[in-house]
Image (cartoon, rainbow, N blue to C red; front, side, top):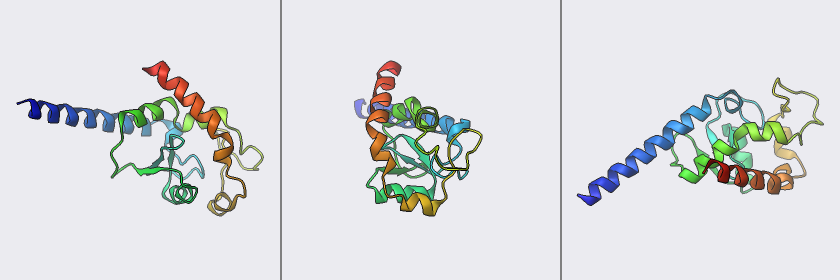
Amino acid sequence: MGLLKMRSNRVKEEDRIERTIQSLLKLPENRKCINCNNLGPQYVCTTFSTFVCTNCSGVHREFTHRVKSLSVAKFTAEEVCALQAGGNELWMKNCFYLSHLPVHDHYGVAKIPHAQFETMEIDIYVIIKGFVIAHITTLMYTFS
């Protein structure tokens, strides 16, 4: 009987996590890839708690960033909490590291052609990773 209850609780938790991720995907800032603005991101870069497209997920993997598929992977409660605290909105509001590029969308985030993103000499994420992780950690404790 105890095993059935544990399994039931685990299924409920997985359902709650899935619903939370789906609701996060409906937010305007998460409907586009944070790196290139392609519609309908299909991955999450868990290193930075951002939603990214298929092409950019490959680039993140090249930098050894952790990437998970939205349709296949199982997410932990901690990863979902980080997405709620961070997500694409955090990067849009606080990280104008791409503002030197000429073309911007209505969120103020630079549109980066995939080839340019792939060949950037400096891994911009590593430069500001400390700031973002500290900010997300602070927000996670706030949500707890």
